Image 1 (cartoon, helix red, strand yellow):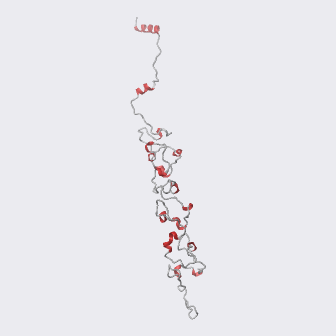
Image 2: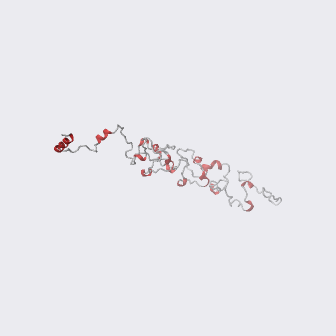
Image 3: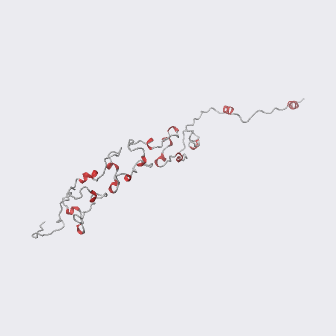
Length: 250
């Protein structure tokens, strides 16, 4: 009997068994087919962003230069100078939770906490300088010539900015005022009666003394030849007259 006929007869008599092979191996059998690879420890599990949003296929250590992530979702939008810094500058070790949110946590405080932690009163996120602080909500309003002054002009201590209370012009301007004898003036002490906040030398000639009208509207030195002593003056600089013998010799 030929072999082919014999095999056919045997298969009919005993029947074919159902195949047990599966094309869906379990995890253990699949792992045995893969090469050994180090286990990846994800350092920022709470960061709800796909890995490929920041990392490349070349290496975990290589970050994409243009990470597309809306930082405003964290409650801390990146604006100004913060847009230019790397993620690792604030998120050390790849930790994205419980990170810094206050200026003093990253930036050294040159004021040594003397002014509190509300840095935005004086600074903004574009740059630390120049300061955006305004005196408008303080007890001393910066108007006129005061408005353009640098802080250091009055505040010698740039750490605390504390200084004696200023209530009168003379509290700051005594050296300037001392160059002129003001004691003879009826309004001595009331600086704003003659001066204004724009300039010291822009002061009016009060009508109660001698009203300067017409040709008399000249510079102070025209009549007051011994400045800064303005108590002496002369009319002869402009007026050449001779009243001798008429009782008007001076």
